[in-house]
Image 1 (cartoon, rainbow, N blue to C red):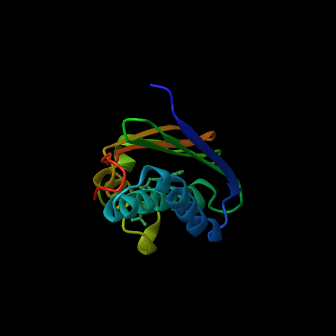
Image 2 (tube, rainbow, N blue to C red; image 1 turned 90 degrees about the vertical axis):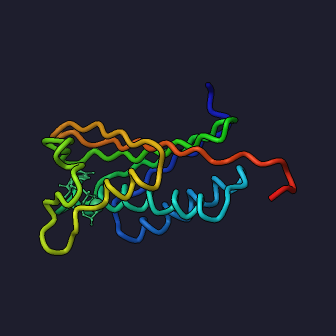
Length: 147
Ligand SMILES: Nc1ncnc2c1ncn2[C@@H]1O[C@H](COP(=O)(O)OP(=O)(O)OP(=O)(O)O)[C@@H](O)[C@H]1O
Ligand SMILES: [Mg+2]
């Protein structure tokens, strides 16, 4: 199925842009008329993925983060967060709950949160090249004016 609308944003991995990404997703997805909790789930999921790019992909420098949001007629929202940073050696292990390379400050729950707040999470990563996190969530379609 072809996306009916698409947003692509590229911003530097500054922590201020985490809130920006969250707000941008919420504003763009609003056209599907999501329920409050659906919108909150999407904001949380994108926030975790963008935070990972900011914190882990570029630990000592700034680099580009690209956020893509695709909307489909059947209510599918596809969120993609891509970085060109250090990449992940073992994706399966990184996605295990409580696994972190972030030390005391981090709890290792970001991927678990993404998984519980969306319907599907895929991670592609190449060490030294970067990481792409793709999340799908299905928003309940409503007849206009009915809620
Ligand atoms: N974009 C990324 N680039 C490089 N490494 C990443 C990236 N995203 C995640 N990782 C690696 O995967 C680990 C697990 O990520 P996850 O978000 O689950 O936990 P965390 O970020 O360590 O902690 P939390 O999200 O709870 O603050 C990270 O500690 C890091 O090693
Ligand atoms: Mg995280």
